[in-house]
Image (cartoon, rainbow, N blue to C red; front, side, top):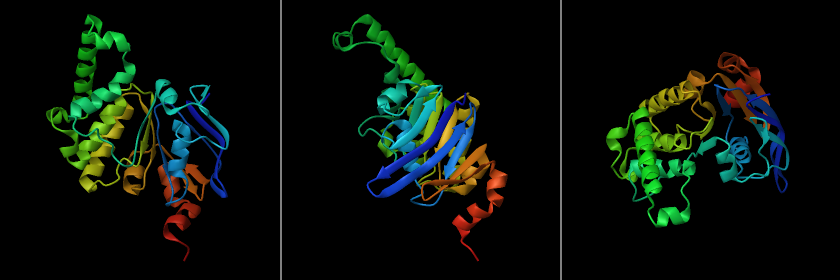
Length: 252
């Protein structure tokens, strides 16, 4: 049984067939990338996997459990976390507090216990803070823990976003264009952090436009064009695939 299996997935928006019969698998411990030109259906695919959009038909199974029909928060509780192309920091909150928000999905204290500040809520809050600091250290931005997250450099904000996703303790991390808006040096750093995350035992599925990043860190690549899968292979084979070359470079 595959860790994540997408099978004959379709999505229609009225007359637009945005995703057409897409199937592929992700194995544990992989970094797998989904690439394609603008409008290829990459983000729509991610939205169906994470529960943001309902699929028209098909199947998405994660560790043997069907995801279609589940809400995003239900998908998250099964061990899947996601970041977005546009960085979403909580304004007026420090980097540490932003990460702590992600960690609260693992908390157990109820509303009344929190309202009355019962002793077990104090311990849980300390544990959340300690784990969040540990994640900031893992991603090498702990010195920015008490700085307003919105004031950080773009690459640092991306690292905070990754830490916040990791705070949910996922087994699968979906990254939607993690290099968007980053310069060449920040992109290289994000690639290093993604590899570091994979080395922790977390499987990664990403959508990305930056081909240098994709080719450097991916174990396998899926190529979409106009909603259809046209190729799936290791990076060296994808670089030489005639259909992929035609899409990105055009025909002579």
